[in-house]
Structure formats: structure tokens, C-alpha cells
Amino acid sequence: TAPERIRNFCIIAHIDHGKSTLADRMLQLTEVVDARQMRAQYLDRMDIERERGITIKSQAVRMPWRVREGGLSGEDSVLNMIDTPGHVDFTYEVSRSLAACEGAVLLVDAAQGIEAQTLANLYLALEDDLTIIPVLNKIDLPAAQPEKYAEELAHLIGCQPEDCLRVSGKTGEGVSHLLDEIVRQIPAPVGVADAPARAMIFDSVYDVYRGVVTYVRVIDGRIEARDRIKMMSTGAVHELLEIGVISPEPLKGKGLGVGEVGYLMTGVKDVRQSRVGDTVTINSRPATDALGGYKDPKPMVYSGLYPIDGSDYPDLRDALDKLKLNDAALSYEPETSAALGFGFRCGFLGLLHLEIIRERLEREFGLDLISTSPNVVYRVNLDGGGELTVTNPSEYPTGKVAEVFEPIVRATVLTPNDYVGAVMELCQGRRGSLQGMDYLSADRVELRYTLPLAEIIFDFFDQLKSRTKGYASLDYEPNGEQQADLVKVDILLHGEAVDAFSAIVHKDKAYNYGVGIAAKLRSLIPRQQFEVPIQAAIGSRVIARETIRAIRKDVLAKCYGGDITRKRKLLEKQKEGKKRMKMVGRVEVPQEAFIAALSTS
Ligand code: GDP
Ligand code: MG
Image 1 (cartoon, rainbow, N blue to C red):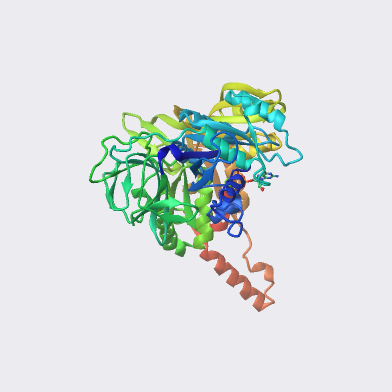
Image 2: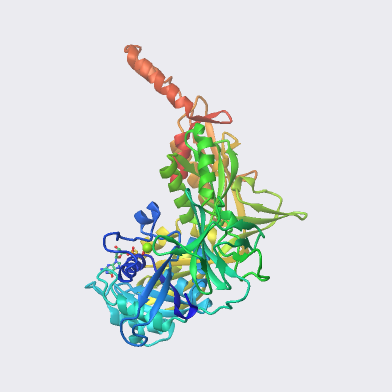
């Protein structure tokens, strides 16, 4: 296809504002999917996405469209719709998807107005100089206030309220007009046709049958089906097995030229060989400069994952190996915990990423898992020189720390005016610092904070929702690091540190953390033959203490010698329990106690 006829766009929206539904309507109107094949959220392929209604992996679909009304009537075009992941954990992937486009449909629920992710995605799109088409969705809803939110939207992006299109992804109203406007307003791609080929990878998916499928947008030159391709970040060369476009199923083709969007298949088995953001060129005539913007995915949040049944450990390892094929951002290494046995320390992009991986391990691989409370990555300068990266609190070098740095995020909170006080109180309590505040309209406020990431991954979102009756929305992105006054709190059972409960916390919060965990463990751990102290300590300084008193009676004493079967049952039960006991020093702790303590902390 000639570049002049191509339009590459994405839809950006806050979660639930109707992006997937609108995409479905577009597929139908362009007759890429017929009514018979149509099922809701055609593009959301993974089960978890479907159930949670979120888009995790982006996809691209090619849709032919002939302009129906107004200017350019009758013009034939090819629209490439690139679906962006909708969640903060995947900001980098969003930014690559945007970089593959010339324009963005900014979709806003006409009953809700602008939300935090609307803003975050808009800012990313503006950084890439995309043409923005403002669209109000769900105008069929009785609660829709298109007039009000057109004002808000126009004010935000600097256009006239009348420029905001109105559609309903549900009924299809206005969608054909929107497709016409995409052709009229979004610029055609521009590239150098006879230059050495350069294509940007914006997604990479592992498929059991086909190996890695890589989605690319060609910037310059052309990739032909018979070419050998080269990854510019690593220099790795691969045979090209297939090249084509998705519409909506893969259609094998002869090649891809300037501005075109499609897929490549090389038979490699690991998405790490074909990374989002990397530049693909041709081995026989390679480009010299890669396209900008490539970043290695960097885990932001760590957690230990352990099988509840220790014999599942090899299965857990196999499952992680398989998931890694499809997830360049997942990292893990074996770890042993005195409390939990053998497991893995895993690195994730964020909390949602962690949840998704955990859920997939449990659901797709049938594993029962326990995860330690998530922590961020700390950079520690040691006394007397030397630097250390700490991804596991139990490895924190207490006593030798000169200074420690923690990751910071820039957060955007959108809230109705009435809750500004509540939001500020929450952010201040989480060591936030206010960077700015704007009124989007008379009753809606945008608050910008910098906050330690560690404070956000701990229950922040739930708190925000409950303090604002669900009205506030949040988005954040990494924003460097800052020095902080942090300490490691250890939890000791009978003098023995329980690694799974060590935590790195701010000095002012150490006491609360210690008291909380100690009290919880006291209520969860059964009495032993001897008295067991539970202590929370910073280094050798004890900051909290609880005691489990010694047991007096034998477990059989209750049975007055009479009923032999009952006695036997009791002994059996005790034996069962023993199997799942963990020894921490001299103390026997049922694994359930650890699980319970971790799951609610
Ligand atoms: P996404 O998270 O942005 O992909 O949003 P979805 O497309 O999954 O839509 C979220 C919810 O809004 C679903 O329950 C949809 O059925 C509903 N929805 C989407 N578009 C419309 C619309 O135009 N009108 C109405 N009434 N509901 C819609
Ligand atoms: Mg969706």
C-alpha cells in the first residue's frame, strides 16, 4: 500500500471508557470481522484480559476503509489500529505502541469525564507529536453529559468543544463518521522508501505453534519475505519464515513497506530475542542508526513466590520458564527461605504485572502459591565505599549503610473537588510531595505528586478509592530515585530471624510495622512446649515484643482415655499437621501461619 493511503492510529482511554467495544465496532464497520464471527472484545485474546476487562498485550489490525461522507469521499484507505495496553505497569509498551502511530483517538466516557489514565496517555501521545482526535463515548447512556465533558476535553487539548466527536461504541452511532475523520485528520506516514529498512517492534508475542510473532511498524525502506532480518540492539540475525498483516487473523504477504504495520515470524522461541522498542533491519543491507527509544524492561517490584507444597518446586520452575517466553519483563532466580522453603525471587514491572503472573501460574499451571509482600529495588552505598542493589529485604546490609536510595514515581490523581483534602492527607501520609494542582473544570481537580514507589505498592490504590468513594483515579510513572531514611526491620521468633517477614521501611514507620507483624504472628502461631518470644528488631535493637506462652497440656489429655478411635484420629491429624510444619530454630510453625500473616499484611 502506498504510504499516502495509510493511517496508523491508536485508541487511548481510561480503563472502562469503552476502548475495546469501540474497536469491535470498527472491525465490524470495516467488514474485517463479520457479524457471525463477532464476539465481544475480539481483540482481547487472553482469558485474564477478558475476565478483568483489561488489555495487557497490544495487537494491531489492518482495516480497509472507504470514506463515506464529506471531504475525501470515496477515498480508499488502509487503517492500522494499534491497541495499547491500558495499565500503568506497561507505560513503556504503551509508549512504543504510540510511537508506531501518527494519530490517537482520545476516548472519554461521556458519563465520567477525563480520568487519570486519560491524562497519562494523552501526555505520552503529545510527547510523540501525535494528532489527537477527541471523542466522547457512550452517548447512548441516559447519564451522558456530552456538553459538559466536551468543554472539559476542549479545554484540556486546546480545541473547540464542537471538535469533540460523539460516538457510542455500543450502538455504533457516530463510528462511521469517526473512521472518516481518522482518514481526514491523521497524517499519512512519511518515510524514505529506498533507505535501508528500519522497522520498530511494538509488540512481541510467543505462540506455542508459531514461535515468536513480532509486530512491527516500518519506518523506512522495505522488508521482503525472503530477507534475513537483524535485530539492531543485539546484532542477532534471523531467518524470516513469514511476513504479513493481521486483518484480523494473520494474512501472509510478500513484504512490508514504509508506514505499513504487520507481523514477522522467525521461529525464535523467546520474546527476549525480539524485544519491544528494538529496531529491525535487513542483514544484507543494514541500517546504521537504530530508531530511538529502546529501553530494556526493568523490574520495579520484587516478590518471593513459593509453592505451598514443596514438591511443586520443579513445576513452578518449568511454569516460569514457559511464561518468560512471552514476557521479556519477567525475571526470576531461585531463592531459599527458612520459613517458606524453596522458591523464586521474581521481578515485575508493577503490582498488576505481579498479580497477572501469579494468577497465570495458578490457573494455567495448577500451582498453589504463596507470595511474600512485594518490595521495590533499593540502591545502597556502603560505609567505606561500594554499592549494592537490594531486591530482597533479608539481604539488606544493616549497620554498613552509608546512604540508601529508593525509587520515586510521579503520580497524577484526578478527584472531584470535595475529596481534595482526603487525597492530600493520604499522599502526605505516604511521604508524598505536592508538585502541582489544576482545575480541569469547576468541580474536578488534577493533583500531581511525587511519591516513593514503595508507598504506592502498599495498599495505596485501595485507600484512594475508599477515601474518595471510588471517584478518584490514579496513574503514575517512574521518576528516578531519592535518598531516604530507611531501616530494615527483622522479625525474630525465639531469637531466630524469619526471613519472609524482613522489610525495609521508613524509619518513622518501623515501629508500626514491627508491632503489627508481631501481634499477627502471636495470634497465628500455636503454643509450643516452651515460651516463644516474638520480637521486631532494627539490627540488635528490639522495637516490639510479644510472647507465645508455653503449652501445658498434652494434646491427648482432653480425651480422658476413653474413645480409642477418636484418639487415633487426633494423632493422625497431628501427624498431617507436622508434615506442613516449618522449623524456625526450635520453633515449629505451621505453614498456614506464614501464609495467613503474609496474605493480610
Ligand atoms: P475498555 O476498558 O476501555 O476496553 O472498555 P470496554 O470496551 O471493555 O467497555 C467497558 C464497559 O462499558 C463495558 O461494560 C461495555 O459494555 C460498556 N460500554 C462500552 N462502550 C459503551 C457505549 O458506547 N455505551 C454504553 N452504554 N456502554 C458502553
Ligand atoms: Mg479493553
